[in-house]
Length: 407
Image (cartoon, rainbow, N blue to C red; front, side, top):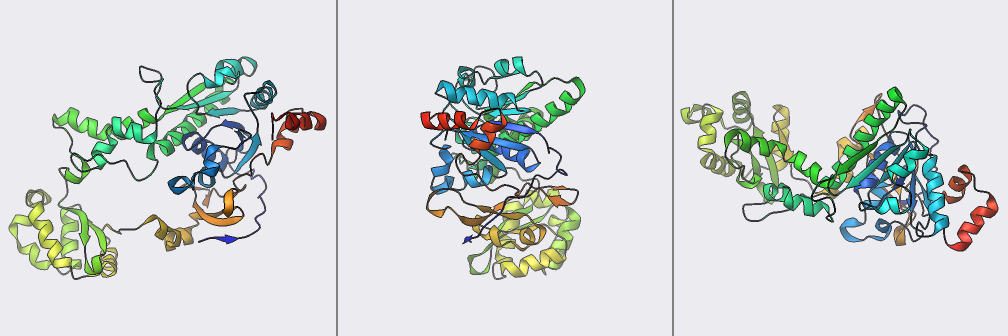
């Protein structure tokens, strides 16, 4: 699913809600870049400050090869060496021009360069400073966190895997959602700034995000006193709510979550005889015999194709889902027709210049998806223009590059 094209950047879109907002982003990996991507997609000018060697996800392979093009569209890139006095000064001048500063480094890192909230807000009290951490302030705050770490300690891996076999979720769920919550906090702070004229520091964290996701299970225990079971072994509240293996080894998820849906399910799939069994009359009764019922349904449906069952379920207005792999979504007719996928041009490595499909934010604004205005930037692509925008002259920019403080 790749081809090579020339893609011109779209101009800024004044109809987007964050048009005119300047965001300076000191981030890496997924969590911080996700926050910046959301603000960028919503129209903000987002400036990614990278090391002169480039942000590390530019060169990731394997499961990380999609990180940079996924989370860094609609951004500009400036490359600065913060370890040099000149590079750190340039970063501070750039941050002083911002409405919002985003970071996701270890606690104390930004303060070393005068880029923490206390330092920056002293000169610019309207600044909103968004930190993305492993943990919010507390006993764990200095621990090193990863998405997988907090999934393990926060109950998500336990709930996802089978009993005794904790399994991480199949995507960077806490990194991505932590960035989303960071963006929500930024937008809330922007509204408050419009009222008071003052900015604030906001924080988002991986662990607290994961615990928020576990809230429904924590409440289940608090209410019932019974520990929740991992999802594969859970006490399912619905009898027909499972994956069935059908003809050709294909799999499909089928559900009937009310008595009315159960009747529709049986009629649509030619299982009317099951409606005559008084032991299956209500969902509660069906849950009581769920293992036996699922075996019966599995045997009765095993010779049917997934496509046939999908058509029957859709025609009856019942919930169903074919079991899909990520690569199949690139050809999903709904995503293609509804504008849910967009082209991005790769910037790094042997695939640089190729165009691939990426996913957009899952909402519309005035009936439109927030699309790709700027391709993921080349390293330091906007260094000259951005330094000039905060008062550096041509010779000064050349000197920064010559010293290695900028690229």
